[in-house]
Length: 139
Image (cartoon, rainbow, N blue to C red; front, top):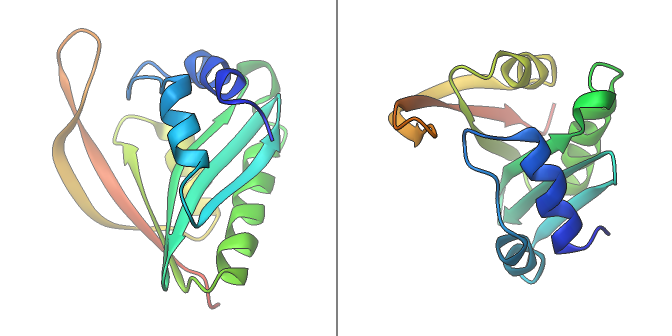
C-alpha cells in the first residue's frame, strides 16, 4: 500500500476540484474498518464498505498514464473487493464537470441516482454540482 504521503502527492497531481486530500486524511481513512484500497504509484482507488453498501471515496490516476485502462481495472478490483466484503451496491459522488470520470463510472455500471447542488467549491470560489451515482454489485 502506498504511504499516506504518496497518496496525497498523487491525489494533488489529479485534483483541483474537489480539493486534493491531505496525507493526514489518507492516514485516517487507512485506519478505518472496511476500507478498500488497490493501486500502485501510478494510480489508486480507495473506498469503504459498511454493511450492504460500499462507497467509492476517490480514484486517482497519474495524468501521464490516463487512457490506458488503469482506471477501469481499479474500479473492477474495487467492485470485487466490495462484493467479497458483503456489499451489494456501491455509491459515489463526482463533480458534474468531470466528464472523464463520469464516462469511466458509466462504463463500469454506474447510473446517476441524484444530484447535490453546489456540493464542491472550486479554487476560484465557484460552486460545482455533484452527481451521485450508484452501481448494483450483484449483477
